[in-house]
Amino acid sequence: MERSGWQFSDDRGQLSRAGRTPSKVTAYIRAGATLWDHGLTPHAVFGSLHDGAAVDPAKAGALPQGAVRYLGAGGTLDLDTLLGGGPDLVVAVSYGGGQVYGLDPDTAKHLEEHVPVVVIDVGQTHSLDGIRSRFDALARSLGARGDGEQQELLDAAHHRLRAAADIPSGPEVLALSPAGPDQVHLARPGAWPELRALSEHGVSMVRPPDGAGANWATVSWAEAAALNPGIVLADVRSNATPLDELSGNDEWLRLTDGARVLPWNPEAADSARSHTRFFASVAQALEATAAQ
Image 1 (cartoon, one colour):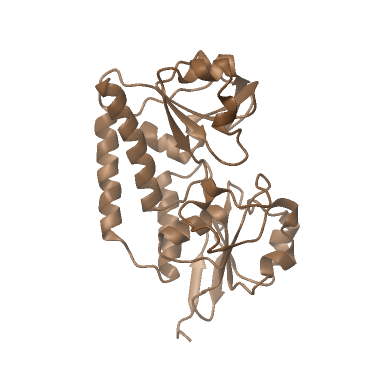
Image 2 (cartoon, rainbow, N blue to C red):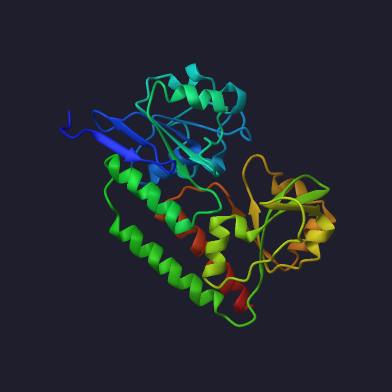
């Protein structure tokens, strides 16, 4: 046993302690994918109310299929399920207010009576760099080693994105989540840390019409097509309408005519590796558009 034990203060200001460094970590899938990118294998992962009985491959990130136990999501996540296998730490996320995302509040409350729970806030009040640094700190506390090479790759992706965004008359980028044949959710860039990060690098983001919805503006496909973006970031999580189901939608075809469509996961892993991929993919699309 380590002399000093283990402790970590989460984004609620709550200090979690253990006699030794936790080694059987159950995590919300986004957090589990992040830990995996740090070289740490979660004991199990769970989904949110938007997920189903099978793991969402988009949210799973680089987690190898079948290598980590999936506990389920939504109403299936009772206390016995979460404590199955005897985890010594639960890592969850919050979108503000300290509320554990994906778990019933009563379940989350009773969970902390049995096992330490660390909550990282991934909401809109935090920067992408800030969220990543919090997961970095948690991973280091759990024994992960720093990856200088990956940090260099992230720095290079930052520089590449800034240079690509600086090209005169560059395309506008629209982030969206398909919601069936008749409507689509358009992301408000200021509500999403990764989209704000694109803006901070000089990328021109399409701002949807004002109205209800703090994170999304729900409009018809015709309204979305009229925005005429040059690049579309399309939500590929399992709760979004699959893009192949839109192949016969005239307005989707008009929206994407001449535009580059990139897969977008609003719940991607918060690691240098994941953020490098995201920035590099947008930079590549900007460069390719400019070369046309």
